[in-house]
Length: 135
Image (cartoon, rainbow, N blue to C red; front, side, top):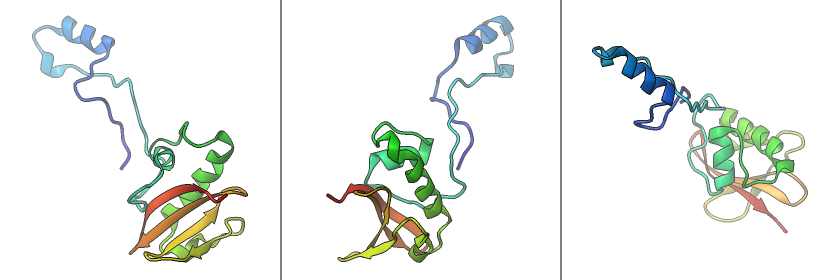
């Protein structure tokens, strides 16, 4: 995970000028990438999302789908999920971690008064991570 990704077949104006100037040796052209996306997390321990906003934070570090007041705390919670080997590792002061009733089993951590991040767990991976308004 991580690294630089560009849109397939996308050539910047600078790269196309370089290609034209080289003429006979197009295989030696160095292309510049104009879009870089770096992964914020080191390993893939979150395998699925219900919330598109949380998925955007996980992949890019930002989103417009979740209020700006909640994004920093959501990032910290997602980082904690990345490092957790089991759901109980999320029992950190301030998260108000607790299990939820139902089957399949799910857990919840507090973002703010009304908002929670809920998730399921399989093996060492969190799945179905969601951003919910409890009220």
